[in-house]
Length: 528
Image (tube, rainbow, N blue to C red):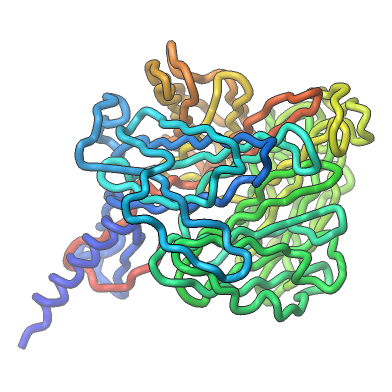
């Protein structure tokens, strides 16, 4: 009896499932070219996308704005036409209430979305006092699913947790790395674990300091009930304060969204999102030109040490920062270094290139970036937004930028405004060309686009692209056209009482498409 027909049918079913759920590449072992090989695979738009947003800073002095956007199906023209999509839907619902002690609560079946998106190509926004907003989760389907992006931006004007806090709501997963966390006395870092699914999840938390793994029983077997969110204070996981560490979040069962809120009593607060695990060159894009302090943290979970050549990709090309030519990262230990007077008035990106022989070790990294006078005076190296404002830490403000992967197909940043939005495009090795599109505004306008040519080893800042006659917040979409790998981040900034508040989001592919095999391919499915 021939097995060819059922195998073919099953492969076709897996291909359809991949397009539906966002499962990525299906590969063939030992297939001949032209007979269902990976080269014959094609990319198709996803039909369903799930996102998780953590609970904003629970302060009655904070205001949070959500901006949802979908660029639409690649090549369909849906985003450009602005036509409503009758078959797709996207919305964010409360992920129930914040749970500190294992309680649970059933989410209402007829709950109305806090934020609903009805058409591709035009953002939708919602603003509310942060104290009224729980953690959120939601799903986009149909033509709204490809590239569905939600930006969460919170302004806390005063107090110890003051700052402009921003993040992109994330896809739930089972493994996350957070280099650059801290349990120092002036830091209050909370990891937010949000479960969007019907079954409970079990999560293990592990910290790695400068001396290696930090043993803690309280981080093991954390239960996250269905449709719930659990915040965990990291200082509860360490017997003594640790200035700089790396957090590993591993999900035993189920899946969660994981985002970390870092509150520094001297520098303000922001979100730290997971770092991409890179088996080679590590890129942290988008250091603002007026940064007065940069603290780099790196970690390798592999079995061997890694030595990197440290480089900066600026507007004119790459150079090595004086006094910090190399960085040695020991296996299983967090390595941190302070890089002062790094950018000298021009935007740049950190590029860590492994020495010969160290190119395959997995590495995660993040940078803590400070703007404002290093002594609290408001004076800055290389220009900036110093002033005479009051608040914790004087006129300084902090943001965190994790390492990220290159944009292969498309990346999207929502929540931009005409003033105070800057896109950073980095080509660490070869030159490249990208297309940048500013969507219509949430209150109208016409999209605008620009082709940007990137020099090899450079970072280009784009801060003057916005929709024509557009009002409200808009999205920026980046699509590589040719050349080498491109890394992208976006900075939002606002001055409040003399404090240069800002937040930076490192961008990766927006998950709009997945690779699926032809029907003749056999089955080896890899999760995206």
